[in-house]
Image (cartoon, rainbow, N blue to C red; front, top):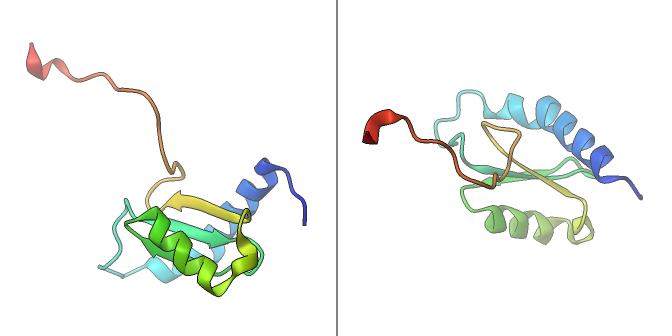
Length: 92
């Protein structure tokens, strides 16, 4: 199955909202900063504070998923960000 990156992202987000999010409710062991690795073909997923660990466990079950995994954070659509941010006037 060949998809554009934007289609992969759209599918990953749809699976997150429909499959993953309902399973996260009332789970105190999950942190908003944890990574979610989603196999967009099987809709299976793994969650871990370590992105690589989540990916490795998912690939153990679905070796054909390499290149078909969508990553995001539990509490944010953004997995990683680059650049700095402005600090408040706290240091003035």
